Image (cartoon, rainbow, N blue to C red):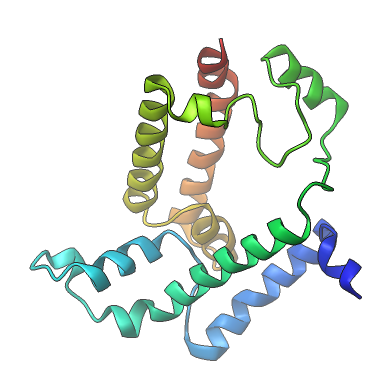
Length: 187
């Protein structure tokens, strides 16, 4: 039984489970799935402000969302602790070849250790990239009115035109980052 929770969930099981979660959220309390809005709720809960953006009933609108984020964090920690050291990233040989050409050859971790290691993170260039990247992701998610999970899962499921445009933008941004920006950073 414990093996069920220590192995990756196949896409054909995880996808329908995520899809079933959307109507469940609506039935339970007219909620939509998304993560990036939790930053707004966290700020509204901690910083008493006269800024209109943070002046709302965050408990009514966002307490459940903060609980969702806490659950995601706790689940991630549990998964990391129970699967530490025996998980292999499964990617295609073609992708491995392309990544190796970019200087990424260690596939024993969930993240590329050639990029995400302490010596890179504490370097001036790594620190600037982390701060700049975090700012751009946060700004983009708020400017677009949601992140990939909110737009790609909830927005597309409810046939929202804005979410379709946002998801197309996410893919274009991902392609530009993968084929234009990442090679510059790694070289």
